[in-house]
Image (cartoon, rainbow, N blue to C red; front, side):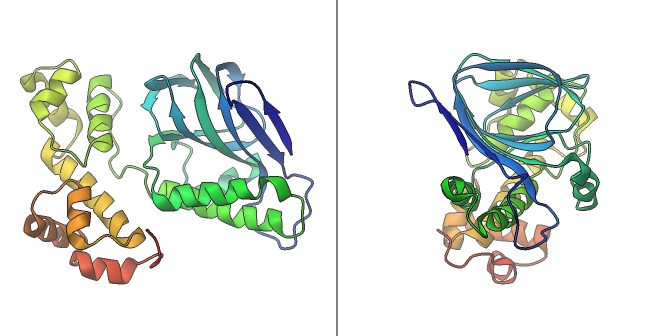
Length: 289
C-alpha cells in the first residue's frame, strides 16, 4: 500500500492488487482501489490505467467540471464518474476534493456492459446512503491488510456490491442534452427531492422565467415537472423501505411527501404494491439503520 500525506490532513491511498494472489476466481477482480483527499489537481489526456469508478464524495467547489471525449459535464457532489481506457479526459480543480475509486482491467469492460453498465454511462449524481457509506468504510478497513490471505477476495466482492448499489441509483430518466438549464433543474430536483419545491423559484434560480422553463421542459421530457419530482421521491422511498428501519410515516417525510395517504396511494400505483408490501418483498438488510 502506498500512502502519501501532506499537511492539512490531505491524503492519497493507492492499493495495487494486480499481483495479490486470490483464493477464489471472482469474475470482477480489482486491479486498484484507493481514496484521496487532495488540495488541487489537473489532467489533460487519454485516460490510462483501466476502467475506473470514481465516487467524488465532496468538494469545496460547488461543481466538478469534466471534459470527457467531446462532452462537457458539470455536476454537484456527490456523484459517480466512470473513466474508460483510451478516452480523452480533462479536468482541473483548485480547492480540496475527496474521492474514493475502484479500478478494473479494461478487458472487463464488455463484461460490465453485459450487466447493464453501458459505454454511455459516464456520470450521474449519487445519494450517499447508509449502505453505500458502510461498503466504502468496509473497503477502507481492508487497506492496511490488503495482502493478507483472503482479504483481496473480500475486497473484490464488496467492491462489486458497491458498484451494483451505485448503479441502482442511476436516474431512470434519459434526458436529451440540449439545454444545460434543464439539466441544472433536474439536478436541483434530484438533490432537493425531500424539500417543498416551488417550480417558479427553481426556474428563476436557473435563469429562466416560468413560461420559458415549462416550454423547454415539455420539449425535452415527456412528464410534467411535478410527475418527474414525484417519481424521484418514490424511487428514494423504495430505497428507504428496503435499506432502513424507518417507519412508513418516516419514509413518507424523508422522501418529501407531506401526506401519508397520498404517498401510499402514489407508491401503490407506481410499484403495484403498498409500501409495507414492498418492504417485505424487497428487504435487503433488516438490521440496517
